[in-house]
Length: 484
Image 1: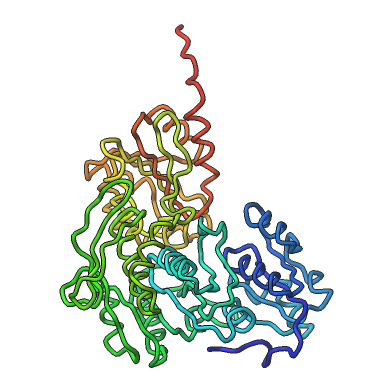
Image 2: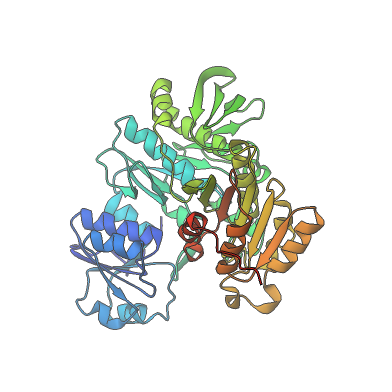
């Protein structure tokens, strides 16, 4: 684990300031530090709900905009988010004042999770859901874990929890750590147990290609302690390549014959899915999952394997799964109007888009699945997935593609084309439409949607609050058409 806090940790830490505090992880860390008894302040360029309201409710003073004046009280420690560079005015002031500083994962390790056993969930897909399931299973088993996760768990109405138990559940993010540490965040943890769900090319702003991504995960696997238990997906060739020289015990999971953890006899019975789990080819137990889709069954199987590793009995796992309420922005139904369901999902990578549409399809028959997609990430706004996205919408009945809202951030020669994607989808026989903005999508769907439809909205951002605005429009009476 890298330790960079201006060479050493301050002996006495009372006041902590977080630069770029409004990110999901940084905001959760600020709240955890506040609840641990520290005096906490923060700053960010964009301070808006829900994070601004969330921090305010926790009593954390947040300043809008970055300025050296925000460090006038000379905090004992500055936590630097990875969203800022070394030319940030607060970073420059921090350096001039000689203040101690660290990254988010370093602060988590030293100030929140010290002495605990980390359970680290890594992979391109499924980190949030798998981590949330594990955290929920541990809470229900009475193990009182601490956790920090990249989504809001509905059971706790929070993405973090401070527990007194020995386990710390955290997503192991492959994204870079800070301007002074360009390595992945997951290299800062020394796992007691770990999950590797998948490895695909993503984060095109910092990774050159799949081999570059694999190099980061290879470094993670190589650094696992011999006492760690690594639970790895058996259906991903990159994962299987990476675990060949693992220094610790590996338990594979999925549907391959011979895997340590295997699921079979899957039955979709809306609103739930039942499946049987086998451990080392012997029957373990039959479970019911409230989550939709094969990808979520795999996430659940990984969580079951970790729970068993921590000696949680099968009956306890079964009971806990039944009470799992899900995660906001993961297949979250935002409302139903006139028989039309509006669902929000975080899917943005081509694989996630494909699997999410496939997942919801059996649960909303015979109605249509209307897929609404906003390319907004640093990868999806680039043309790296231009051809791949055309194969991600096969299970949808109607497709609405928005122009990327932040396209000016991308060099012209690298930009993704929503118009081309719509043309490619049309060539594949799909009913697909291009929209320049959110307002035109809402207008189209108000006229087009009919009872029984599922409108599946996919974006990693707020999408101009399309969900609530659409629900309002679907409920409003249609405008009167005057005859001339």
